[in-house]
Length: 227
Image (tube, rainbow, N blue to C red):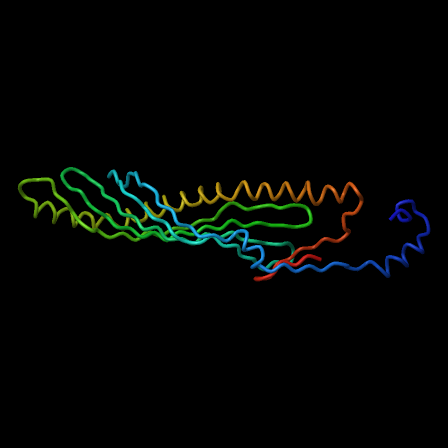
């Protein structure tokens, strides 16, 4: 390097480069090795206090699932997904006038945070999320002394008519909620990894003049490769 930078002995430099100018390190990291530090089970119970189509809804929800690390095939850089796959089971009651409706809901939720790693930095894309809610009526209570049967029949018909819209609203709220939560849960760790990559890897090597002329990363569906 000193000869090249000073412009001395160009023929010698060319001969040396022709002999040694090739990769001298190949490193493969298996997905399961990194997964042990990331993969975890989700088991959370949380209260529900919401308003859907003008009806106040209260109850609780129980979410179970998994957060998994997943390598994404990429030749230009390392590409890694943090993925959430979970199901929420809810038990709620909503009241309007004399009618109280108990609803049991099942919402499947998923989220993905993509991380990109190359020779310059660790970067991340915004969380992508989806959710789909399926609800069923578990009971209708009527707080009236007279006409309960008629009121229950009318309420049952209205619930059936409004269910598709209510499920769509619940799905959208669940999607927004899981997107925000997964972003919050992953942001600090990814930011710290980015800082460590700069301060503990790139910068020390650059300061010492040891940074490799070639540093290429790629991923298959099961391995991260470094050349």
